[in-house]
Length: 283
Image 1 (cartoon, rainbow, N blue to C red):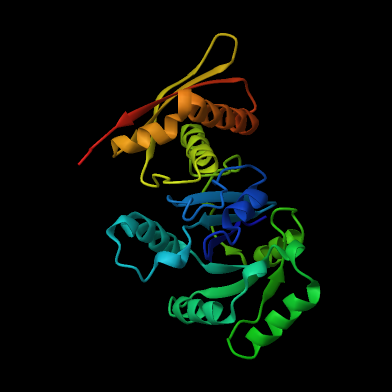
Image 2: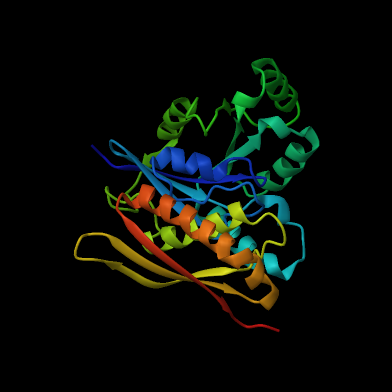
């Protein structure tokens, strides 16, 4: 059979469920899922191969920041525009439980200028009644030029098969970008680092240093096939160190345990994780 391809950008507000959906498509946890704002900071590609069709998904940061002039958002904007430049189709995701007509219309006005085909996906339908979703679709269809709407729960993998079938139909004859066995553009070290960053976001509820960086120091399989990982949590301000360590080191212990458990689940092996906190570029 002739190979076919489709490149899809998953775009929407923070916490719309973009990362959950991409993990659902590739059936692996490759993108960080967290309720904190802008947890997806890098552009992450997920690959789903269905027979002769390869669908390449670009997970993107939330578009909340697009109109801000905050220089700290420069990387987020760059990654979002990179994804947009490379895609054929936009999945605009809406957290149905937080639906706001005005916000959707404003985002649509911006996205339509990109001259990409766009569909709307109502996510988290498990949190609302079906009638309300139908009312939202009816309201939007009368005022914006979108012909395709989908209702899903990415968390519970509900309605995603219908969405996948639609994307397969949208694919076109082309060579594949990735090999058949690849599911992401990120390696296992990146994913392990992301697990630790996610664990920090989960376990710190106040004064979270969003600009922290996780760097890999050691990533080595031992003779018994266990995996030894040592990571550095790099922060720019001394005061964050006490927050991350916690009283008597209890917080960093919890961060390590949560991250180690998630890495073991994703990589399917016994993991020994070691963490240290370092101050970098303090001003």
